[in-house]
Every structure is written in structure tokens, then in C-alpha cells.
Amino acid sequence: MPISPNQGSTGGGTTVTITGTNLGGATAVRFGTKTATITANTPTSVTVTSPSGTGTVPVTVTTPGGTSNPLSFFYVGAPFKSSIGPVSGVTAGGNTVTINGSGLSTATGVNFGAATATPTVVNDGQLTVTVPAGAAAGPVGVSVTTAGGTNNGLSYTYVDAPTIGTLNPTSGPASGGTVVTITGTNFSTTQSVTFGDTPAPFSAISDTTLSVVTPPAVGGTPGAVDVTVTTSGGSATADDGFTYLAGPGI
Image (cartoon, rainbow, N blue to C red; front, side, top):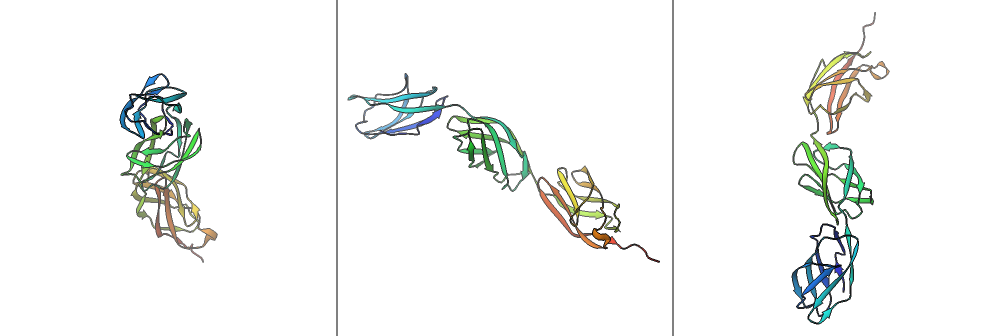
């Protein structure tokens, strides 16, 4: 006589189906000493809502013909989540985050706001999940659902990718040191600015403005280079956005 699922929340409320023979007319289904609520019954199955409980308990079905042999049901506590990392990423989703806590081994779903993703369980204390696309930029609550229930309490922030509007000035000496103002959008989480492949010192003045000091041109060679701004929401590139100028010669 199988029972499915054979585990559920300590708070009760799990829909459980017991299958077997001669189950019609069931008068009681007991989880240990507690009686479950019968919601459906046929000669070969009984569906119930589990009562609250702890540990492992015997489940029996009573009909006018007697009481069945017991099956085991395992009560699982609600999960606890202690941390999530990274705590932000692109609104398009697709990056992987790690959630740490306890009671995670039976995790079946992770919600980022209204969007649901299927996690990979590493062990009882850790799982990884690919972040689904967000509806819009901004913070959302993160909840983990296990056989023991659902636990909230963590937050993840969706970040839109940056855009580059203008650079001013657009040229300077190959020796570097030019202060360049970059205007655009979604700059508040800027992680790096590069001229070609060379990182440049920068300051995020606002979400729409960066102040950058150009590094020296590679090998002192003049010419146009791409300028790339990378944030936690992604990257944007101004192709040939800045031109290194050759110094005078006499």
C-alpha cells in the first residue's frame, strides 16, 4: 500500500494519497495519533490532508473491514535560509546564485518575486539556482519551497544593463590622464570602465554620469579604442568611443 508523497511539512496541510485495495468507505486515516482529513476516497485510494506532526509516524487507513498495515510518513521542518549570493544581477536573468541555510535537501522551487526556478540541491545546507528573468529592475523577495514548507526573508535585486550616451571629450593624449565624462543610464553599480582592454579609474557621479581618467594608450600608440562600462547589470560599449592623439614632434 504505497503513500505519496511520504513526507511533508511539520505544520501539516500536505495532500497525501494512499493506494491499495479494499479502501472504499474509509472512515479514518491516522498519522500517528492524529486523524487526517479525508478529501477523496475510492476502492483503491484515499486522499487526505495531513495533520501537523514531527518525526516519522505510522499511517493507517480504517474501513468497515478493519485497519490497514502502517506506512511511514516523514515530517520535515520548514527550510531556513541564511544568505544568497550574488545579491543582484541582470534583469534578463540567466546567472547562477547560491543559497545557504538548512533544511534545503527537499527543495523543489525557488521564487524570485513571481517568477519560479527549479534549484539544484548541493546538500542540506546549500542549493544553486539559475535566476529567471525579472519583470523589471528592482528588488524582489526570494522564497524557497521544500517538503517542509516555504521560507521567505531574502532579497535579490534585478539590475538593467547600462547604456552609453556620450563621452566628453572624445579624444586626448596617448599618455593618458584626460578626465572624461560619460553619460548614459544605469551606472550606479558600475564595476569597471575600460579603454580598449585597459582599466581606467572612475567615479560614479550618479546613475547617469561617470567621471573617468583615461589610462595611457597601450604602447603609447595613438588611435581610436572602444570604451566599455561594466555594471552588475551587464556591459555597454561605445565602439571607437575615444581617440588617443599623437603628441607633437619637432
